[in-house]
Image (cartoon, rainbow, N blue to C red; front, side, top):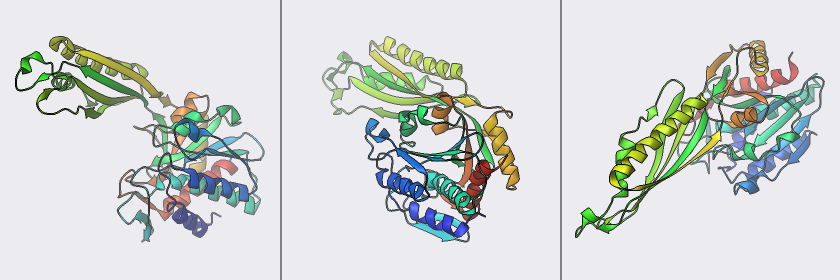
Length: 367
């Protein structure tokens, strides 16, 4: 019942629309126009103003009978994501190789739009649905964080934004804690009196060297993303800065890892006589749903109805689902068939794109 040729044409069109994070305005307008053309009530907010984007979240409502469900995907892409040229060969869609494809997450956007269009043109019985397209997902879930969830009537949601073939369900995902640290040493001339200085770079390096990083355990990861200090070689540097993250599906483990890292840096500073500034910010919280959770059960039934085996899995990344779960909805993330996301090798098959639309349709029309 899904119109595969229409779905494919829309996807090939949408990925050509430049929409890197904070520049999603044109894509948001196109999505809003598509929903409006179908006769849905469309509401556009001012979420972009909260983080310097020219875009906005798009929310539309499809009236129906029964309990309302939320179907959502995000409009922004990562870089390099401008000037995308999609290529279709042997049922696989890629970019020409200089950019990402943008299937993350325009595959989700197009699948949801096609499912709504199919319901309307075939006059299919369906439950009420809220369609939400967010901005700024890739730069910190900013659109979802700025969303006024009081607008939503649904208590159950499905986020079409996971890699892996249709059937994958991310039923648990980690929270994330961001760390910003600065070590303050003491300047000195590196040739005349280096012993009078305290090298902030050296102190920071010793602190980092003592840390347990990367894969901590099955639930927890940690990574240092940047280290910055910019001085002439004849100056003992008095400032070094660092940004890092901790992720875990266990909040206590996340806090414990951050405390371990801080203790390592404090010890290095104390030994050298340096001063430490340390800031932590929880970006989003973890979530975990069992097999009996409503969205897991609903997605499993819908997947079985379209002939795809449900594959509940734990994820390693954050998504809008983290924010929505934190704010009272019960959401899981669904695979759309994206592979090698955030790279120039990103791809998706036409089969997965079609199955994603079939899944969205089944979620709105099934039991």
